Image (cartoon, rainbow, N blue to C red):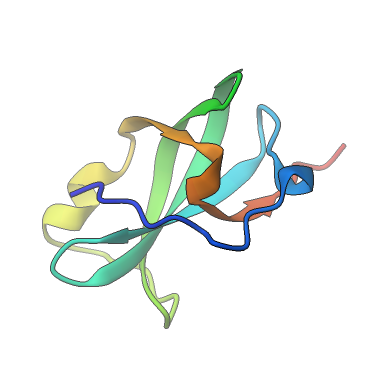
Amino acid sequence: MNQWVKNPNWNEKDFPKVGDEAMLKGIDTFEYRVKIKVIDLKAREITGIIEGVFASPSGAPVTGGEMNKLINAEVTFIQEFIHDVFKKNE
């Protein structure tokens, strides 16, 4: 698990801030996305808490099985693995 897929279209302007949500794409036995709440930033490293797991490309929530054990897990990753950023309301 946590075999993240790099985003070839990553753009520095999309760098998240603490409180934003980021989507990462992973591959295990199937392709999935995780929604992560950003809690810490250090240079290129981003740390966050996984809030949800979704099948890709459908976007349907994964509601059972091993993948749900990822929810509430803390993960650290580099910016090139981010596929989407959802800015918190400022």
